[in-house]
Image 1 (cartoon, one colour):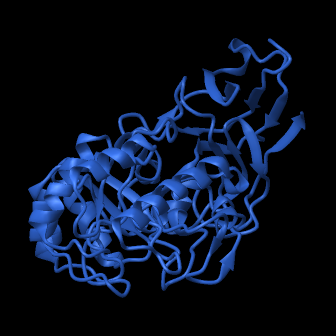
Image 2: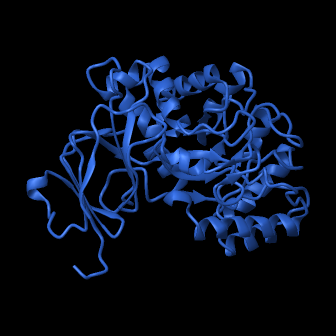
Image 3: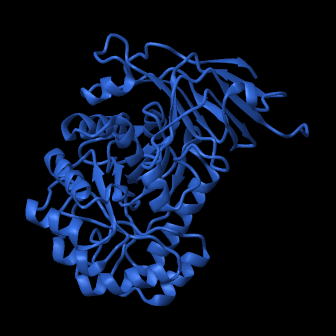
Length: 392
């Protein structure tokens, strides 16, 4: 290895959650990563663990891919004017979130709504989160909100500048299904992924987006299908799940009952790979540092879904739908991990059973791109066992 090479070895792993629905639990007690990418997974005795620059003793805890929040509304840095809160991204890292996806930087004071201004802000947002990762968290941002008058060349220019996302369709002046559909097609043509607002209005300027608009617009992600905050009627939610093949996004800041309905409908359709999770924060409900973990516990315990499957909703499912190189324990993927265990004194024979009873796990460490980013979480309940860095 060259002097510049960084090698991470995590040994004495108890169990591993893969993030893959087809095989949510995988064997092995060791992971090796070089320069931020997973190179080996398996038994410690058979892997090349020599010359590690960082070695972690997992102390028999669980390892899972870092969680992905599919729906956040960042503004700039680690600050949100919506709740006048600083370090909210760092706080979410302590909830196991290592990657976030912007659904629009809509809370920017004085957000420009003219086409030149909105393009300029989207490009700037993409740049500043590309150049600055709060506490190491990967923020995919720069998601312009659609406004009337945008033309195909606008999407081409945005894509050429590095913008890869659209903010929630429906939060701007574009609310008609036909207009939205044309703009979504232009965005898709140039490799820009789209999310549509679903349900009742959430902020001034937004409005009701019902099933007909969602189906006609045909965005890539049915954003907060359980409402952000107000959900559509049950029959419309079921119609959306049945009427297209797009992502079914369930969020913390929505209607929990409607979220369970959407998840159950996806399973009935044998399309659980479409279910992804977000918090839809910062918002009027605030910031939920443990929002993704709470969604996993809620969907597992009340929806009777094995906890290892619920973890896939917040990892591999989202990664595949969002075309990310994280969210799965697999050679070649980014070395983004959470090390976690059953919370102290919680019921259940192990962490998964405890989660299936509605309890949160305790996070002992987060790793992003092979680098330790946090130790014992200040936000989760304390874990029964904790990992430690034994050499660095």
